Length: 420
Image 1 (tube, one colour):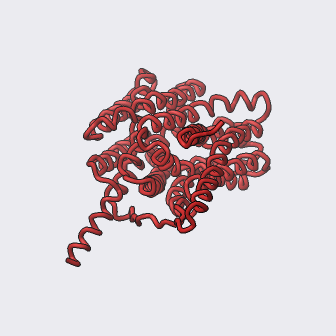
Image 2: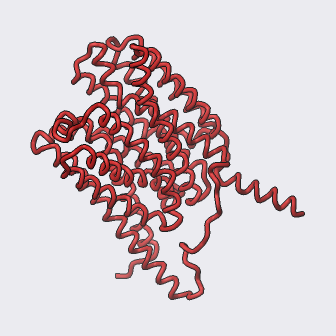
Image 3: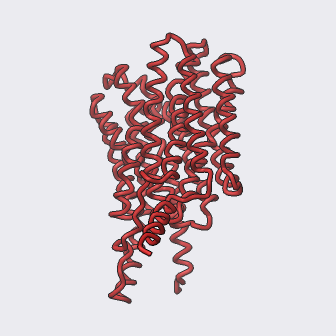
């Protein structure tokens, strides 16, 4: 039976879609599966307050570094090969850290794991643009939803699995999911190599795609890139503060530790409906700032409610804050809405996530430092107001229809005018 080119293309898209969704599902597991197990991991490996704080900062710091470095790797090796390397790093790091007996190698291997997933963070948006250019909103909705599912599912399963086995098996088990991610991408990468070889054999003078120099884009001079980075920083700072400080804050107010953990899980779960809604709604808006303003209002109501009344109406305040997470889905969607090409999407994704996560990394630390310095939570919650302002500044900068490539085109046009 002869397989038509259309059937081959369709099979390739199915494989790419499966690979994108599985990668998105696994990205957060390395981050959120460890904290619920620190009660068992800490005494055995020797965690103290400093190393626990370092572990909390590790994800945004490593994601930031990966964001800035990954676009160079994409330019050299291509999207698919970078993703395969990222998954291999994550698998090695996850399995290896489950075997160590001291806090230092555990942190180092956690950083290696996060580096792999940080590369995956950057690669996902340009992969969507490459394989599904006419279905960006739908596929983005799917993979952002998988991010939310992974975030909610991993901490829920971590403790029961550790109870049935031990903490080492519990944190290593997620490497199996990462291994499954490899299958569709290894197949896709092999098919791409065969198709390129066949094209080259048919036309020996054909230049391979990898040898074609993409248009150079300098994100450091792009208002769009800076705006998205600032927007992501303000959003992620609030999210990381919640993941780090919400349970301690609620228990300090008098809530049971188990109930405080449930509030955090509820906050994470609310990312699911927003992940589905945002990519389908925002592309229909001429001005995305309308949606961002609504989500910002949710954040503000949640912050104020939690500060003024942490023990009464807690579920209501957590609902508002959880719905505010629509700003994160917006940031991921804007990577493709504010770029014209796969190359531009990769550059914008790396720059925005690199600087965005880097800026967000200091928020949980400062939140705790201010709390200790003032003896209360008021000044710390005021910091969340600063994050809101930062996020809105970035939202205004990316609201217009400009693309990251536009700055390059404008510079080229200006140079041509000077030559004339």
